[in-house]
Amino acid sequence: MIPFHLILFVLTAIAVPEQQVPEIEVYQVERNNKIEIWARNRNIYPVTLNLEIDKQNLSSNKPFPVLDVIDAQSSKKLLELAIENPRRAWEYNTSYSFFMGNALSKHDDSHVYRLPYRLGTEQKVSQGYGGNFSHQGAVRYSVDFNMPEGTAVYAARNGLVVDVVQNNDQGGATRDFFDLANNITIMHEDGSFADYSHLQRNGARVRVGQQVRAGQLIGYSGATGFVTGPHLHFGVKVVREDGTYMTIPVKFASRRGAIQLEEGKSYTAY
Image 1 (tube, rainbow, N blue to C red):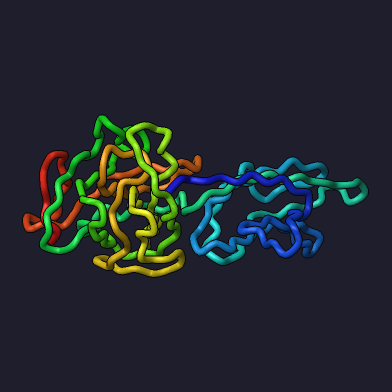
Image 2: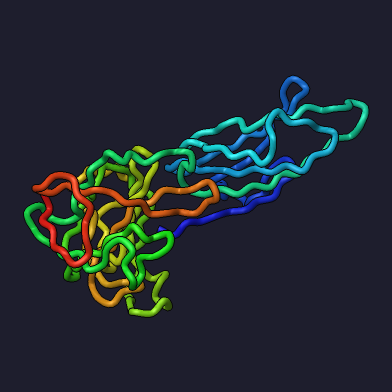
């Protein structure tokens, strides 16, 4: 899933087109001679919001910038502003950015993931952690399984489907194809996300907002996006306070117990 950011600038309200409701809204509530700044999140996932305020004749109960997490489909008070001198005019401007996920959450490193293909079948890891072709930087801790196109893909962990892309039908070995990968992103209970990428066109078998269980069929592998051939790209990522995402090393279930996968080896789903 591609991380996204949105910057909005407001005085006291956000202007949006008629009948269009913003997914994230920052607004004010005046109460007891104070101005409360609230945020409303209409998404099905939590967001991390970074708020700055330029103010005159107002004091804040929190230092800036304010970094806070707004739970899915909920509202939260971010801070309070108090008028310093009631005989003088006051004003403020807010600017904020937000991104999907809880940047304050911690991955459950004790969790053991299921291999994302049918139990009893074997797949080879064509590119592992730190692979030279594309597993560097933020996606360093990702795994590519050498799957023929149309191979069934199963959820590696329970979670909520937060993104599905399945309309692409192109793939190739240059970065011109980077943004053309079909993928499914699932959020886990600890705030981490799993990306299942390079799926075939119209290959998703889940929808956004759907709860899935580990071992549930979610789609079919393909060769869309930045690829040299059909395979499944799998990675677990967490969001950081600067809004970037980073993959993390995880362990998978095997007959030998919980293991980390190695490039060039084949593994049977257990």
